[in-house]
Length: 252
Image (cartoon, rainbow, N blue to C red; front, side, top):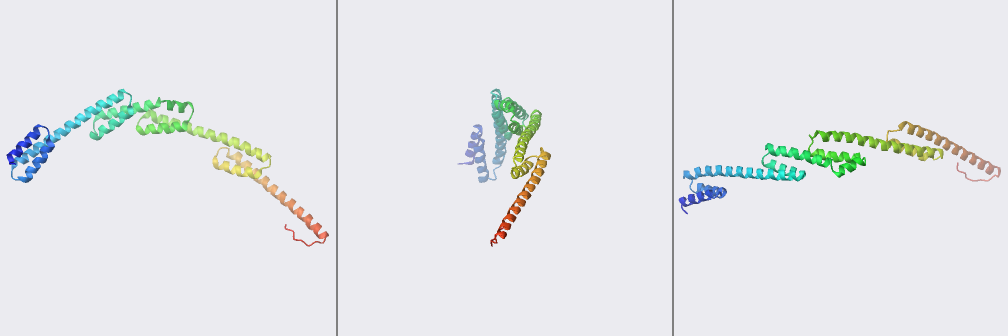
């Protein structure tokens, strides 16, 4: 194929908007005929056309993408609207319109979840630990949302107070049980129970500590009493054996 025929083919490709094929053929032409200046001029022209084509394709993609986001927002499908905005920003990170749509969609998504049956159920059932995690996940979507940050802090306080309330009830019930065991003389169980309770919570620590000391002293007295009774018993056995003049080994 002659050089003029190749140039003619390149121009036809350009007319048809097939700039990539035209570029490949022009690069081949420049390599084959390096001294022909026309290929250099044509190459620059094709690169400009390719750049313009890419810009038009990008603008078309953004335009269609923005329309898709608006449709999704109209359907209150804010989750997919967020994903679509993030995809558009990968193409044009500085697009203000897309950024604004992303922020609005994040806020709408959060407010939608704040009105959800799950949020209402957790609130009504006072499940503040689960509600706190629920808000934390939402905050990960849009950390700058002030309203949600306030809810996170408030729910965290409620969860802490609720946990403290549970511990208080548990300690009070456990302390009553330990006092009952003390009255029944189950001293070792009381001692072990007090130690476990002190490791579990600092609430009611003074009362538990007092009961522990009381049980330990009572247990020591009981051990001393048992030891004394055992020794007296063995002494009686020894005396009888001696009186009977029997030789036997008696363990004391």
